[in-house]
Image (cartoon, rainbow, N blue to C red; front, side, top):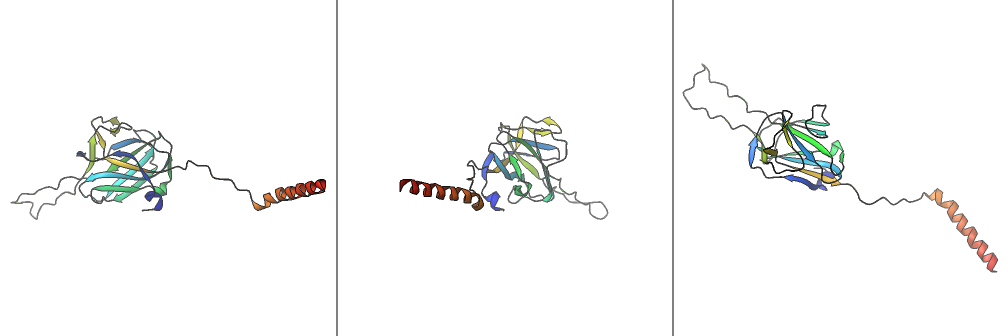
Length: 196
């Protein structure tokens, strides 16, 4: 993790997961609560699938244009998919919207045994799925295939490195201070001459 991501603070928190779903056309709309650089998103993933894809767009859902960020071949660790966004340099103001989506692939099909006949019970693996919460996230909406999905939101956390609230101090260059120093020296000499 980069130092910027390490210095980030929790912005939006829609956790923990209480339900689940999976699919490719899910877009979670998020409204920024802190001005600064979006450095990380954590998404609840139930199961341990590989090959996840992530995308992010600025603006409100539904997004159908080119993505601002696209990542692929991702895997969650301990049920959490962590997306480090420091390299994307996404600067947000309070109230700015962005949309993220995760494609969770279905489980691989099980090949039938040679001859196509099996005298056994095949237990299919449960599909990996995104963690979700009841619709308690007020600052954004979940969209499915272009329509708002009012019953659930993706379980996620966003982290932002806050923008600096202090203005940098302007320091003059040494060459620019020389005329000022010469003027002050001349003024001091003039005062001494006038006093004497």
